[in-house]
Image 1 (cartoon, one colour):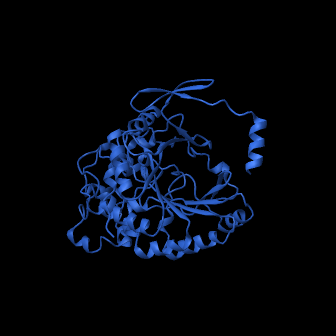
Image 2 (spheres, one colour):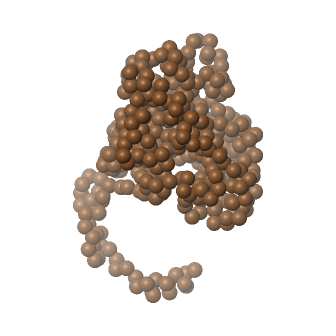
Image 3 (cartoon, helix red, strand yellow):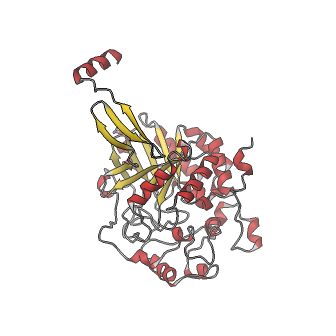
Length: 394
């Protein structure tokens, strides 16, 4: 079956670009992509014109968060533009060495919500399972830069059996999100074993995987991999695309295989200065995501990660982007703008204020065009009557 995105001129291939023509013979091999990642200053200087800020950032990266960029993703970079939105996401800059007073090593307070190492239980009915500390490429704004890539200040020490035992004795948990690092770096067989073990716990209803690999390494999303995932439904995947240029034909095709395998997908973007902090860029991104059958899910305010101030926008800019989308495109295309409360507060949604006034019996509202409407607001039902009604309904 063909879909409209299959013929959309917005989707283009970027292979092989910075690599010799003979690399095309191996370009679709995910293992070749991983073996040929750009992970050194020499590898960068061989291919693009670095700024002094980037060169200093690369030298710093060995002690903070490693640099590693797959050939597929590297080919999206503009060789001569230091403000390229792809380049800003994966090439270190010297500003990463500057720590603002408000920044934190663990901005989401995950370490303080670990009942066992590697398992974060912050919300009542769901857990975050950190299954690896490695990724195909490393985002310079990584929330877990303290543990990811193997060169940070901490080491990820997941206690597998203790985590499974905790899940087995905690029936409130119905939803497990696999993250890290990137779980899709696991082989099909290893990921299959992990999902099977979790599926054997009766009260776990939903499994989710958070992954940037469909964007960094779409060659990993094979037909065989998608067929394996079919065994574990209901299974959801959250991908992470920040800019429309990231949605190439290879990415589109990989996402299509996942969708055809019955995997619902949502996208989680991070709002980043100079990358996607304009309404036009966000609108192009969310439209392309829908063409790939991916629902825009969250737009995150960039966390207070050490060394990320050069990438953070103001909260007002994020609210303004949502305002620029609401009413101007389909509701399916509009993500929820959220801040992860510093220190472990969880996701806090932010929206433009459409309520102008609220009085007993009346709410005054404005729409996306600025037009004002009054809604007759019913008087709340007394608590006793409410309880009696629902006692009958239940």
